[in-house]
Every structure is written in structure tokens, then in C-alpha cells.
Length: 231
Image 1 (cartoon, rainbow, N blue to C red):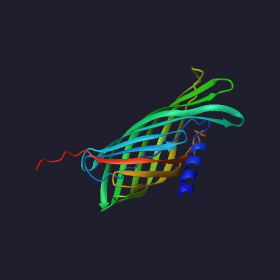
Image 2 (cartoon, rainbow, N blue to C red; image 1 turned 45 degrees about the horizontal axis):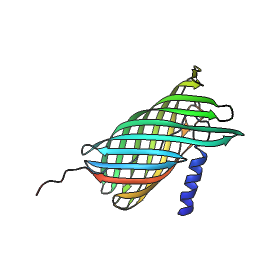
Image 3 (cartoon, rainbow, N blue to C red; image 1 turned 90 degrees about the horizontal axis):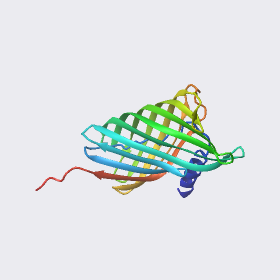
Image 4 (tube, rainbow, N blue to C red; image 1 turned 60 degrees about the horizontal axis):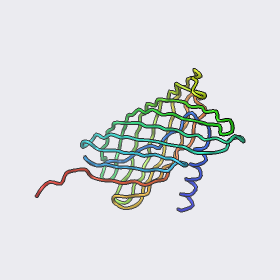
């Protein structure tokens, strides 16, 4: 188990250290079960990671707020660089318990991000702004101490503003990405260690500079915000 977690971290670090236009963030698949449930995830990805929150505001509907930040140093083809991204998204969704412990969810969301790549030898900086619209389906089995499931995300990415040292190049890239992952969590009722592994694949090859793996390891916390009724 320790070797598997170490491998996840090493692979995640490797794919965070290159000049990508698009870095897929981790998929937030909380498997919510009841109204007023709140789940918060902190996941490591390279030297940054995901901050994810999901809240069930009714018996079947929920919302998400996710943030992804990467800021790493590496060496690509002999070029030392600093690269990464800053990205945020929000989504609204539907959840339902099909059988006790088995949950289905569907989310529709949108986000905005900026990726960057700085050649630390020449100090040339490239930044790319992008919008994302995505649809997500996930399903899995959840108990008090364990969670496992599959999630599928279809994401449309429009990288519309690329700059070199602040000067807009005029280049624009649009593509659709298919992003399946397997996720799991293990621990206590409120706090668990979580991990996910998947991939991102461009459907039209219009964006070729993107991170192909979705890998993370982190912590998950579950709370109920329901008010206790007086006796």
C-alpha cells in the first residue's frame, strides 16, 4: 500500500512539470447521501493540488466549488522552468441513493483558469487563459469507513488568450476531453485518506499540450450541517 501511494505521488509530480496549456484538475465525486451533508477534500498533485468542496442543499440536489493550484519547477529537454496553473470552477448537480450505500451523481459545471510556463534561463513567460464547461457522471459504493467508485467527465476547453511576456499572440485552441477516473477513500466516519487515478484524452487533437494523467492523494472530511432539533 505504501509503495502504491508513493508511485501515485511520483507520477503526479512528473506530469506536473512540463509546459502544458491544459492541466485537468481532480474530479470531485463526493457520493453525497443526505441533505446538509458537506464534504471537503484536500488532494496533493505534484507540488500543488486540489481544494474541493461539495454541499447537499436538498434531498437530491447539491453544489460544488473546486480550486486547483500548481506551481512547480522542472527541466524539460534541458530547459529549466517554472510552470503550473491557477484554476477555479463551480457546479450544480443531482444525487440519489440507488440502494443502501450505492450512490449515483450527475454534475454540470464551468470554470476558468490560467496556465503559465516561465523559462528560468531566459525569463520568458507564457500564460494561457482558458474556460471550461463540463458534464460529470459518477457512481460508487460508500460506507462509514470506505468509498470506491468511477467518475466520467466530458470537458470542453477553450484556451482563448495566450500571451508571451504580456503580449497577446492571437492563438486560440478549443478541444473536448474525455476524463475517466477511479477513486477511493479509506478511514474513519469523518476523516479519510483518498486517492484517484485516471486519464485525460483530447478528442480532436486541437490541444496537444495537456497533462494526460489525473492522479492525486489527499485527505477527505465529511460533516453534517443539519441543525439539531431540540428535544
